[in-house]
Length: 115
Image 1: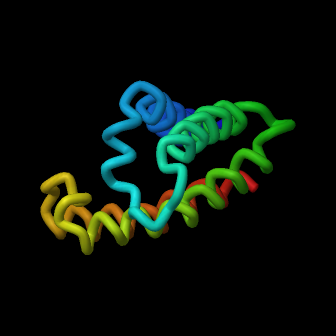
Image 2: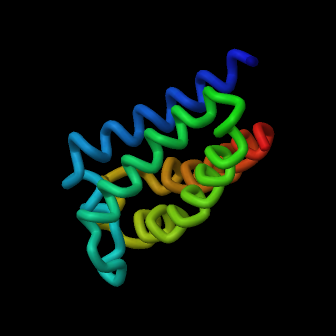
């Protein structure tokens, strides 16, 4: 197993963990048109943790990678919302918010490498 799979797994497990311990921070960036934001923050956090862990096992790696890719696509509306809504931007500079969207594509490609 390559070392970089551990990094991707760590990134997703860490992000998922923060969804669970700081849900209000993630709820602040959710577009208002998305219902059940608190539940979705928790579900996405659990999904990120399980997917991150799933990358570490050959038997679950493919489904974990597809789950990560799916979640990253589902997160695009949140990142766009953060870019166009000042209150949701967390006062981050627009350049960072744009780079964050571009990072999504890099993460999608990275997860795709494990399919």
